[in-house]
Image (cartoon, rainbow, N blue to C red; front, side):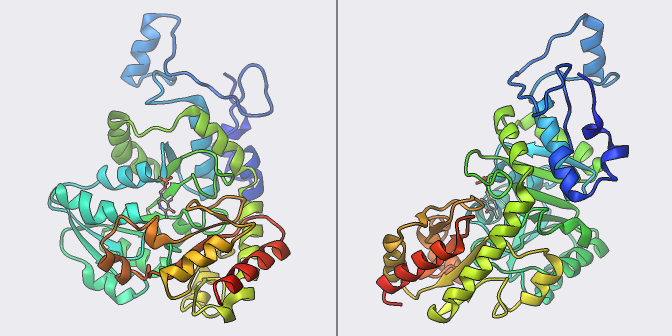
Length: 401
Ligand SMILES: *Cc1c(COP(=O)(O)O)cnc(C)c1O
């Protein structure tokens, strides 16, 4: 394997974001391929016994086993780190593998976690169900209220865990305030940045320690594979995450890593265009729906903050049509936009969170976090905005709106 400039940090760290997205992490083999190679291999062979002994001892660089290293996965990790502005990244099998690893690798019995109330259903399950089973205390707060973050801190608080914008209520967390508060108290922030990605928001610029991803969403961007990632300092990744990851094995398949690697090349273009479409579609229907949750619109309580910490507000928004029956009527009348609980796709997709992504939660906790029976969430894709507006318009009409 010949290293090219895509892996040479002295060079890649000087590149602008668009160059990093297309060239960063490219690690060419002796064939000089233009597109990154897909190394579907679980193991490696060695010319002699001493070589492998040296690698296992950490005295020589080189691959030993794909739970520990894989060239295609390494290319993805390097590109994600470059785009995030992070020192290091490790790819994971899925977004939930990433969240689980990012939390469990650093928490022990007796620790305390403060977490945002508005969160993806499985993220809440980790906080509400998994962590307490291992003697880790958790507090769930209204993440849009800065005072609640401070009030929730205990002497044993180890981690702040939140999404911004949050799934599916689009709550926006004040990154500078919350990350700054955590820093000043020696607390590690774990930010789930799936709704924005580094193309739209880089939490580390506001002091975040760890940025974790579902790369299934905007990073792949075409609804093909499950993937995840964790970014952090070189020290944290090597000393805190890697011992956990190497021994528990939440690894991404090289094939999935390769698909996401290709997705990253167009991430910024897609994320910006989809954000633009989402603002246009939100504006077109805002006056017709009882409640609109869209950080890109002036009606969002943290619109100004969203514009301050994001380059664009993302492809996802939500709105409330007041009852499950009416929400289902809107979904059933759609002709172009698909009924689907995925997000980040280039296709427009819509779902009813209370009966899908958040169905596993207690009804009371769901209502408390704003996932009402009439809430609909939409991922706005790359289709023509006129076609999208026309479809949503006729679906709302069919539901009596
Ligand atoms: C989808 C999602 C996850 C989980 O990701 P998977 O890749 O489906 O495991 C976590 N957090 C947020 C905010 C998500 O939208």
